Image: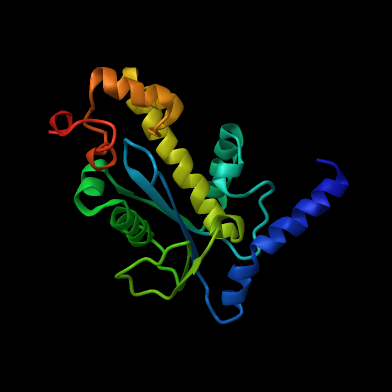
Amino acid sequence: MNDEKYQKEILRVAKLNHYENQFYSQGAKFIAGVDEVGRGPLAGPVYACAVILPKDLFIARINDSKKLSAKTRELLDTQIKNTAIDFAIGIADEKVIDEINIYNATCLAMKKAVENLRVKPDYILADAMKIPNINIPQLSIIKGDTLSISIAAASIIAKVARDKFMIDLNKKYPVYNFDKNKGYGTKYHIQAIKNYGICDLHRKSFLKNILSKECLN
């Protein structure tokens, strides 16, 4: 990265600290960014992460995890974990998703992530959702993973963790190509479901339009 690009990157990341600095100026000491990954797949859990970063942290290339390559996400994942004040994961598996629906399961995973932090945050910045039943002030930010450095960091850690989980699962269930599709409904994945049926990791509530009721029992 040349000097001009580096200076632009410094300014871009400084803008990502906008919400954090707003609440630091109001007296907050520990601000947690919270994001989730895996609401849309046909299989596997939904993951959430809560991250507390140092004030005015600069990490080059940090962004919404969806805008980054797998290699860049993995590099940033390590860097974030090495510099964070604290971070934690929360998970809701496919059985919970089928029982309470994906929205409520996502809220539960996000709540677990915050509760798993060793350092209690003064304030929470959450991506597009409000976390229920948690006694900490919070702000829901639409497209927060592109507007808040803490939420972006959470999105990266959650994405890397869930992807690794799904890649590992591919060893047990190779016919579905979980290592490539991460449980999302690709053409190959849907055809594999039709050919081989479902496995323990599939979300039955997501498959009603693909398979008959008999296949889901």
